[in-house]
Length: 440
Image 1 (cartoon, rainbow, N blue to C red):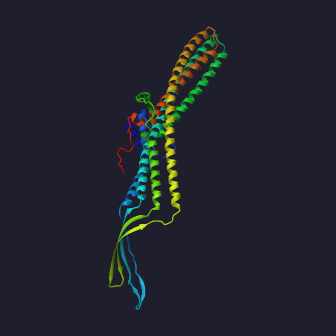
Image 2: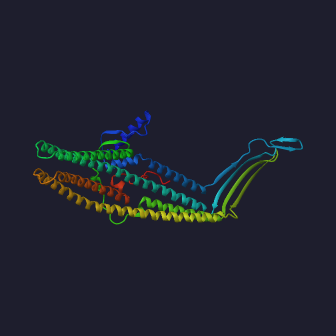
Image 3: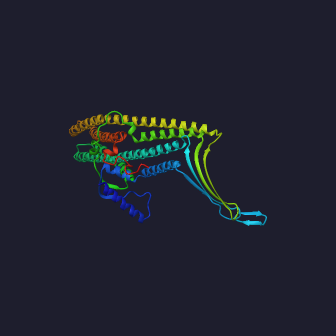
């Protein structure tokens, strides 16, 4: 099913390339198509630009790591003078006399007291951070796509319930019309029924608008407008139960914050090493033309020591790096706090949702029973039309509230599954966005 949607998306992309793109056009309908919860999440991950941006950032991190590792490799440089060297002598000006020839220099870093180690450590931790940030972005987009799908099904059922309510009121309106025609009820009852029917039709229009908005929101994520949507309850019911708190160290968001802290620690070591010199080995070869006929080629080999005698900014660089490390630690703690809060909120919403469903089901059943009794008593003149219409309204309100509670639970279970880092796996999607990538 997902493959069919990907092909439909590819066909749409090919058609779009042949015609001017309309940035505000609705996504095309996929005729005869059905879509499930996992399909919606998979398509969201396949086409969202946030993941493309995260992959580009990861590739940049790998390039930075390669550049940092290359600091230990020899550096070969050259110098060459192009053009004549004009000098004055006893015979006047001489062309190309005393011309400096080309030179080659090979520099090899031997030891720098932790500068390069810190640079490589920073680049390595940053590359890992970008990898975990990619996984975290995928988790967040998976949750976004799943919740958008649930909104479609929520408003789909609410629209059906509203249509059912309108149909019930129209049936009462017809019965009242017959009673008015027979002289058994006042015409004011018919006017009151008309008011309630029009009010219910307004609710139906609003429910339809909400459903359309939810469909467009989902289509904006997945790129197509399906004709039918599968029930997501079965997929969500397969989620494994979770007890206690998540294993924070394995969550991509926390792991990314941990790597950011390690990168900041590497920066501290690198900044502290700036007070020490760099030791290196230099090999050189120069070709010099002292006269037109005499050449003197020079070879050199030396140990180089370079550094700063006085550089006040080093102290502030160390302090800045230490503050960055403290900020990274606070960010990690804040991430854990946020995840724990979301887990507690989702768990409570699930628990409260089941209690709400039981209450609304009882309310709905009682309203149905009351409506049946009130209808018979209205026919006997023992109940007013207002009481009968209010009973019908309570049926609609209880049913709508029950649907909302059911989908609040489904949404909370999606969020709870994502808090534990298991949403993509539970939907049968790949657990890693970088499983085919190299280590860099």
